Length: 185
Image 1: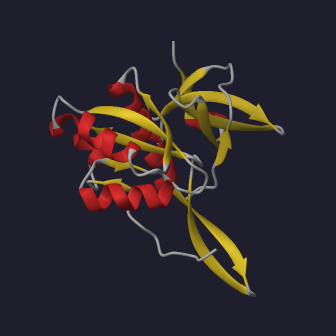
Image 2: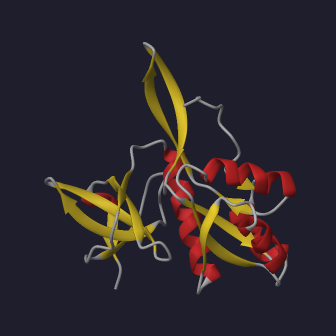
């Protein structure tokens, strides 16, 4: 398995901020890819100028005695596409996509993806949570994540902030101190 250099995770770079300006004929989709095809699909979408988001996180690997930095998909098997019918059709014809799931609420998905990107940008270790967990909704009130909304859960005696992508029914969590959050009504 070759270790490739970091690649772009969004097309355009500010997609999560300007997605509404890219045209009313586009909508959000979660593309479920064949195994280990997320980056290859994103490179093909990038070549065509198709708007997409592939959340990547750094992971240190030991290869032949050397410590290397690899960038892996946060949600293995998924690339988020913001495209027209023609762009969705192009993605499906790459032979890398198994299923195309339309987002019922594009604005909510875009907001959740922006929150995920903020978590990734902190560089804090993240844990992918496979299912939604019941708990109290909170908002972070200070620090680099101020304004972020999520759910508090307890794991191994520590408090964690759970931020969810409802379309995939998957979440991310990171350790957080109780004093940094305030309950939402």
